[in-house]
Length: 129
Image 1 (spheres, helix red, strand yellow):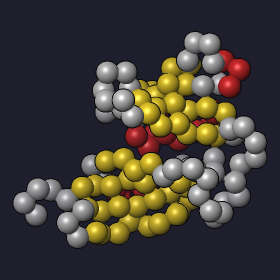
Image 2 (tube, rainbow, N blue to C red):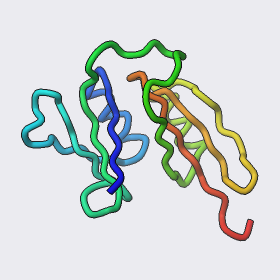
Image 3 (tube, helix red, strand yellow):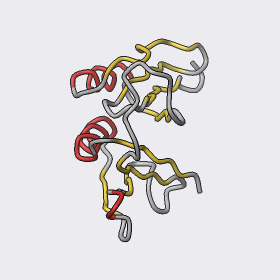
Image 4 (cartoon, rainbow, N blue to C red):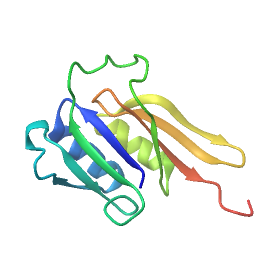
């Protein structure tokens, strides 16, 4: 089962950001209180859904905005790439790559989450288009 983790300096701010951006819910993981680890639940993420995710307090300093990516980039399907991008910028995110059309793939954008991570979103091209 695929699993990803998001490392953040401010767990509460990151939970609010990702809850608003993707509609995720967070549950503290028993036994991981010291690292402030939360399991992620969403439409396609969580126990029994094929992919799991966690959000945890970062160990060490947050990378400076605009610095090279530290870790993997996660990209998630969204119904409206431009709408989610605008929401992110209005709610603590910063531009990493503005929305652009990629023929045969869809409309894609990347934002910095205010915690030193870059997250992508894509509205896939509809089959037959």
